[in-house]
Length: 194
Length: 202
Image 1 (cartoon, rainbow over the protein chains, first blue to last red):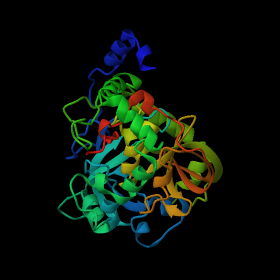
Image 2 (cartoon, rainbow over the protein chains, first blue to last red):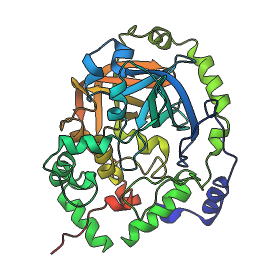
Image 3 (spheres, chains in turn red, yellow):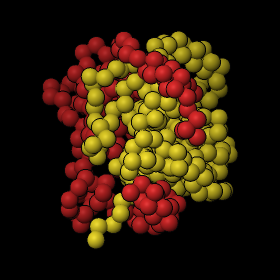
């Protein structure tokens, strides 16, 4: 399929990818967040209430916002919109639940980036990089995930990043291979790409 | 790895223009790349899109009932789609949307799901439903349930909520699981390349 891509298409794509001005979002003022260069990225700092999204949407509520089993969001104070949080500030496949959980149902200030410009999903999602309880002075970096992972996986010490040592990941790869298609597909790929 | 490397570059250039891919292929992580360009052409029209979305949503009963906290029961739906890693899909951090699904992205999808990043069900029309609960478990539960279905095409019965432009799904039951049907590793190799299988060390 890729062989059919013409030079003209490549050139057109490159032109479309030409530099453009950074779109400053309506929540960018005062943000100290790090820019990641992501799709549709906007710096965004705002205040709101940390919520268990299942509780917020469906009234299916538990103690402690699901205690880590549930996705979390922030109901923004200024417009009451539910901002769905996908990620914390760490750069290794880490979500934001562990960083939001201590603030369950509390008012917070957050700083991070809104991302996404999907053709179908019209809202943006959030990467939270800093958080503090509203009124507190110091910001906290959202980097609790790997600390919590170590606590949950005491026997998983070793070399390499957590995702190479995670028991749940290793179990799936051992069972179904890296492409999810079995060991034979992995072996074929290795032979073709050596 | 030569083949996958070529596909990786082509993917970034061609599949969908991504002027600001935030990954360093030499490192096993997402890497902020602020020196690169920030905003795509589509994003320039964000305010227009949001205005249109708001106008459309004014007539949406689902949105109106979901706006107050604890107000909605959700619309019962049956939906067929692929379980995807929503961070890589929406952020563009790994490349175009055609490459961050299916077999090519399976290992990375496992990493992200294990990391507690929300999974979604992407239906054939491109709509992504953010999964909040899967067969009785919170979608971030530290079990194998959500791990078992990464990259699979499923048909699910559940409850749908629309709030502020995002579709959410509680999966009550899975009536069909077709496994991984998008064998796009044949086109893209492993995405990211460091998720590729390696020859066992002797």
